[in-house]
Image (cartoon, rainbow over all chains, first blue to last red; front, side, top):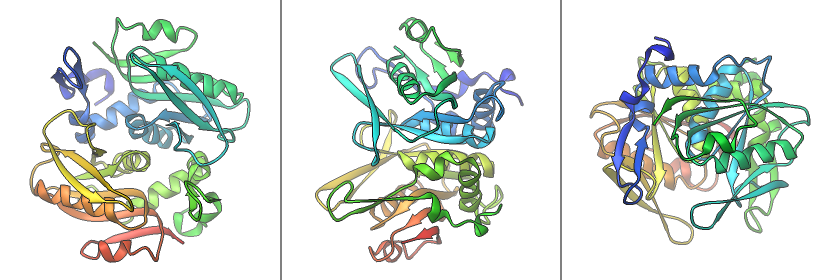
Length: 175
Length: 175
C-alpha cells in the first residue's frame, strides 16, 4: 500500500486539552505501532528524494528522531541529530528561538557535515515553524544546503509554512 | 560490509570529562553520520530477530529513537516509544527508577500493544542498566514479553548486564 492511498489521520489520535486546555494534541503513537502504516509514512517522507539528491537527513529530538533515523536508512544517507541545549558533547553551533512563553535552544555539532552538503530535514509536526526555522539556520551556518523539509503532520493556520517559505516543504497530513 | 567486519569503535568519539569531570563520554554522532556504518549498526542490532520472532520494537528517548525507528522499519515491526515523565498524552503506565542523584521516570501508553506481544528493546548504550530495567518492567506490566535487548555500546564494569540478567542481551561495542 503506498502512502497516497492511506488516510494517515485514521491512525492519529486526537486528544483534547493536552498538554493544556484548548489544545488539540495529535497523538501519533497509534500510527507508529502499526508497522504497515509507519513504513508507509517513512516511504512518503522520503518523497522523491534519493541518495543522489541528499547527503544527510537531520532531525530534532525526540519524535523527529523516530522518523529521521528510518528515513536516513531508507535513503542511504547519514543521520545528523539536532538537539536541545546542553545535550551534544562536542563543539556546537547553537540557535535560540522564541516559544509562546520564553525561549528554547537547538544545537548541532560543528563538524556534523562538510560545507556544501545537501540536508533533508524531517520532523513529525509543524506548528509555528519556529524550531524548524532554527534547524535550517543551524544547517546553513555550517555551510549546508537545506534540500527540503518533510513533516508528517502540518497544523495549518499557525503560520509555519509562511515562516519556512524559502524552503521546499511537504507534509502528509493537514489539520 | 557486514557489522561483524567493522570496528565500530573507530566511529565513536571519546570525549573526556563530559558531561562532568571523570566521565569518558562515548559520542556516537560520527557513526550516525556515516551512512554505511549507521546502516551496519542497524543491521547488527536486528541480529537474528525477524518479524516472526518479534511484534514490536521499543526504545527510550532520545538517542534510542534514532536506532529504534530504523530497526522497527528493517524488521517489519511497529515502533513503541518509551518516554520521560509527562510527555505521553494518553493513559500511561509509569516506572520510577534511581539515578546516581535522585530519580527519573519512564512512561509507556497503556494501550501500546496487546498482551502477549513480543517486544525487542533497543538503546544506544547500557551503563548501570537502570533505565532499561525500568523499560522491561513497563513492557511486562502491559503483559508483553521482552524478546531481547540490543545495545550499540556497553559500558562494562557498571553492573548493567547483571541488572538485566533475566533477559537476552546483546551489544555491539564494549568499553
